[in-house]
Each structure stands twice: as C-alpha cells, then as structure tokens.
Image 1 (cartoon, one colour):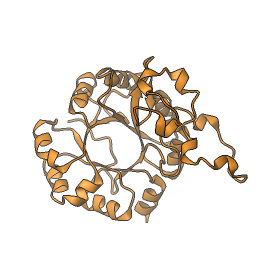
Image 2 (cartoon, rainbow, N blue to C red):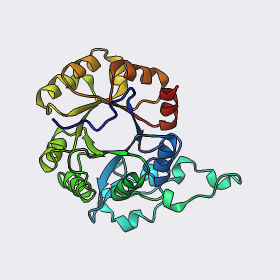
Image 3 (spheres, rainbow, N blue to C red):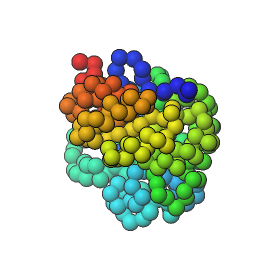
Image 4 (cartoon, rainbow, N blue to C red):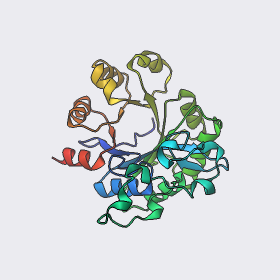
Length: 268
C-alpha cells in the first residue's frame, strides 16, 4: 500500500488552498509565501496547460476574474501570461494606499507549477504539494503526463513523495496511477450522492476529497468513507465549526483559504 503523504500525528495537515487565498491573490507567489509564513504544511494548486506546454497555477479556464482581461489560458503562451498582473483584482485600490507596502512584481505574476515545486523543495522544512488537474480541457491526458514529468524532475514520483495529485476526474487519476504508481491520488467529490458509485471504482489506496459542506449536510458521508478504508482530505475549511467537524471525523488534511487561522486554532 502506498503511504499516505498527509500528517498522521495528532492534528490534520493544514493545506493552503491556492495559497493564503483569503489574504492574498490566489495562486500567486505572494499567496504561497504568506501561507508558508503562516505555518501551512502543504500548498494546494490548480494547474492548466498553456499553448506552449507549460503548467501554470490558474483555476479558471479564462482570465476575466484573475487577470481582468479576455483570453483563455490554454490558447496562450507562457510569455504572454507572464506579462499580466494576476494580483490587482484582489485589492484594486492598493495603489491609492500610501501606507501599503511596495509591491513585488514577481509575487503578482503567473506562477508555474515548476516554480511552486521549487519553492516547496527549497523551504527549510518539509512542505507538501497538492496538485489539482482541471477537466475537461482541450489537452486531455497531456495535463497529467506533464504533471508527472515535473514530479519526476524533482524525484517526486517515488515512495515518500511530498506531492499528490487531485481531480474531480476519475479518468485523470487513473492516468496518474498508470504513469506514477507511487504518487498518492485524491478523488475529489462534489456531491454526497456520488459516493456509492465512486466507492465501487476507486483504488483501495486512493484518498477521498469531499467538500466540507457535503460532510456537514450529510452526516452519514464521512463515516462511510472512513469505513471503506479511505483517508479524507477535505475542502474548503474556513470556520471553527467546519474545523471541529473535520477533527471529529479524523480527516487527514484540511484544505483552507485561511491557513494562518487554522494553524492558530489547531495550536490552541
């Protein structure tokens, strides 16, 4: 059985959802640095493939929300994306604040998966990386192939890897399992009613990633996942109530927009 990469001590692993995304613009280097400074155990990212084959940390297929312009990530090259500001949307009035700290442009630009892995690898303590592949996409299985290639470059395709791959796509996780059998995978789940079908098809070593609202609304769900032998990585846990539920259920990782808050609450 593959080892679970999450914290197995007395508290769940704290995973920064797109970085410290409540505080900073999601998926920017600034958001991930803030998460590390806050004591996060792991960094979560969504990845999309550019037209010239680079994996970038972007959630939406288009740029309207996070870069305030028209365009689709998969049709653009990395050099074009690198010219865009991915942070101003979070605080559009920052330039008018005389007391605001000076902006570091490197922290505000598009972030590649490779750069994020470098940041995690170079940190002074073990930092894990949870990589979500987005589907459907025009590049289909090439996304997982590129993800595994990046992990292999870091030596993270073998047992003990600090990386894991997550997806709402069962087929995508099957690809990862074929390409890198020792990399843990997390079957994300949007609806509780999907569990009976998923339980029959997912691998016995797969982790399961239900949304915390589904766990709260369907009290039977968490215990059934646990009884089936699957560890849970739960998203998106931002309140004390939801954190308490996760602790009660014994989840292995909590994915949060507020890593500083969750680290503080767990410490207390």
